[in-house]
Amino acid sequence: RGTHYPSSCAKLFASQLQFLATAFSLIGIRRYTQHLTFLTIIQINAFLMTLQRKNLASPFLLSNCYGALLLGGIIVGIIDDQYSQILWPAVTVGNVAILLRLGPLHVNKYVVWTMLGGILHIIRVTDYVEVENNLFWAATLATTFVSVIVMSLWMNRLEV
Image (tube, rainbow, N blue to C red; front, side):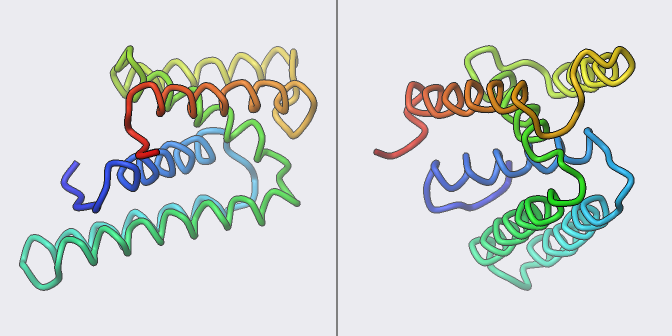
């Protein structure tokens, strides 16, 4: 909301990056690199919104800056994965959130993140599946990734 992207595809891309950043934080790891990166992005974006509200910068420029910050945060997450080994679970959780929130169901965001946080907690406590890169998360990641692409095309949000 409130962004001025030139196309619906760019707006969808920024939304998906926000979901992925939230999923990285929800999984939680002992290293602080990702958490501090996402916190920095949130704080810089708050400053950019202040600039926009005071008409000191164009909304188009600020939307592009925010998109670049989100992309940079995801790149930090990918680089940090060599230590944390949570890229596949994080992207899977992000994709499930995208499907529930942006898909045809339009589930409330609080319900989505509470449900996914609860499921991750149960997975961690019961040790059914390790929350690290493995075959289970690779299979679910592939399934959810294809589902997100199909949903996006079905809803005519991507301009093909």
